[in-house]
Length: 116
Image (cartoon, rainbow, N blue to C red; front, side, top):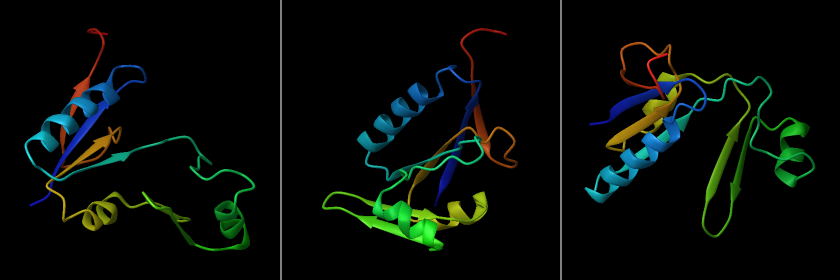
């Protein structure tokens, strides 16, 4: 059964540090863990201008899969639906989401450096 946890807070509040600790602890307990990072910046991409995968996307490919000896990356040119993404991760035990403050019906841990 997939369990989701949202780690939310302002930039610089320590969200990533909390997630690192959770992932380490859960994987040490033999749970299968995935993470999803929300990037609110419009136009953000992991792809790099001029690379072959970037050129594939620029030519119109809606999905680009990059396979190396140690990693698989899938880039999809579409509006993300969180429910659909979580459904695709259903074989995991836990998915930890960074950001997604406005996500409804999900357990949230709010991270803050101080009471402000």
